[in-house]
Image 1 (spheres, rainbow over the protein chains, first blue to last red):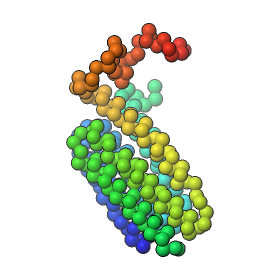
Image 2 (tube, each protein chain N blue to C red; image 1 turned 180 degrees about the horizontal axis):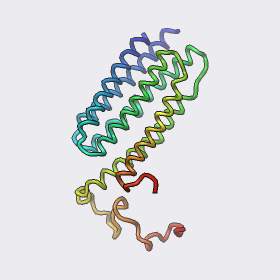
Image 3 (spheres, chains in turn purple, blue; image 1 turned 30 degrees about the vertical axis):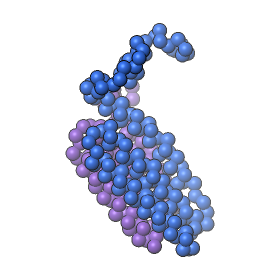
Image 4 (cartoon, rainbow over the protein chains, first blue to last red; image 1 turned 90 degrees about the vertical axis):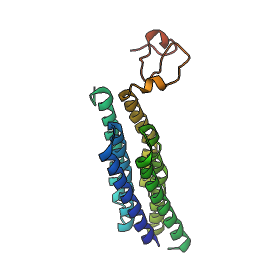
Length: 89
Length: 130
């Protein structure tokens, strides 16, 4: 039963990633694209966790944690760049 | 594995997947950025939360050890999500000067702090600037 729920999870997250990709390509403003990237990172974390359950391995949690950290830092860096024209002043 | 535990894990996985889908659908369908910002928070809290609790229960049931990594990821995402949303809205407000006219008056002689720097005489209660 868990295997079928995992298949559904993979399907849902993949469709969600495609929808985010559409928002990333269409825009229309820069901040929409930043928000789309941020949501894509969140969905990738979910995908990694689902893959970890399927492979029955806890190694993937470190990757998910790194994704969470880099996603946050890159989003804040993008916003700083749009706001101030520079990331680190 | 016990049937009931398996059912709970599957339900949590499905709930997580559905909320991921709902968050991205909202990102796609809502009209402008301020409303679009609302949708992916569902994916961050309920989507990731459901998936992580499912993973925690799964590894508790199979390995017999409670892993703390999932709690770390959830905690990190819950702390950083408001900061991200604040930065995105702030950058968007500064990119759209038309938004300033829509804002209600503050009722004081100071403007909205997002747009105007706080003058020195208004800082009485604060510690002196270093």
